[in-house]
Image 1 (cartoon, rainbow, N blue to C red):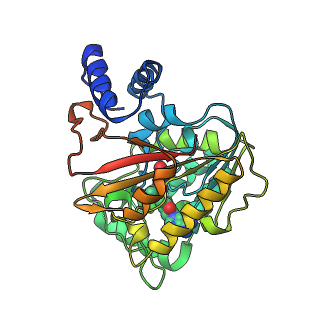
Image 2 (cartoon, rainbow, N blue to C red):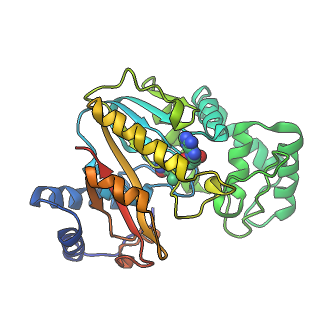
Length: 323
Ligand SMILES: C[S@@+](CC[C@H](N)C(=O)[O-])C[C@H]1O[C@@H](n2cnc3c(N)ncnc32)[C@H](O)[C@@H]1O
């Protein structure tokens, strides 16, 4: 974990100055937040091995204190890299995503021992001579994955070596991210994160599902359960909302689902942005008036708290909840 060079005093003052003006934070909440930020320093929050675009790891110190306590069933409706699911304590965790590549990978390693997972990775790395700068090895392995393997664990290995660790396929369903030369490889941090990730998801209380949010079964949810939503953002870009992947209809349907959960007494929390690079999400702004809005104004840059600039690019990152 990267060392964070900041004194206790500076930390306190950053947290207080930021929270006091932007979140309705009580003294207790500020103290809670201080504790959580310290925990991230000590590596207490787990990090997904996926390095997923839009992953919420850097926002954990702000989000986790806002989550309800004593959760019975936790639903991570748009789990992505699972940065949230692996940091929440609940009797039961349902991690869902529309992307079957993610869910297939999670289910595959859940059913394997960690030694088996690591020895498969070792074997592939040696066979294709995957290194931080061997583009030929990467391309040969990508061809092998696309034309022979299609194994979800092999896809994970590819992602470790790809540019920005992104998941992108062409029309022929071939993985087409280029090599992340001199940047991306299966390094010791990813390995450590994978081992920890595997330990958590192997638990009987963690289940992965591969559905659209629209098809999620909510009839068994009630008070004591908590649905967290981190959907693609309508007004920002990411590979998973390219080519019309997320539009206004999705936005309206998701808010209708959250209204239904609210009527059933189920707690929900939604991450999103109300403003980004000059654009505003008016559908969200209007809908959120019915609920509690927390503005998360700290911008975390590589977990470096020196870079705590407010609204660097005019982004208004929010957490909307019904409790
Ligand atoms: C912002 S990312 C979630 C990141 C995640 N919270 C994390 O920490 O890694 C949004 C996710 O929503 C998924 N997604 C897109 N459309 C969806 C849909 N209709 N139903 C469920 N998941 C969807 C994408 O595949 C993507 O993984």
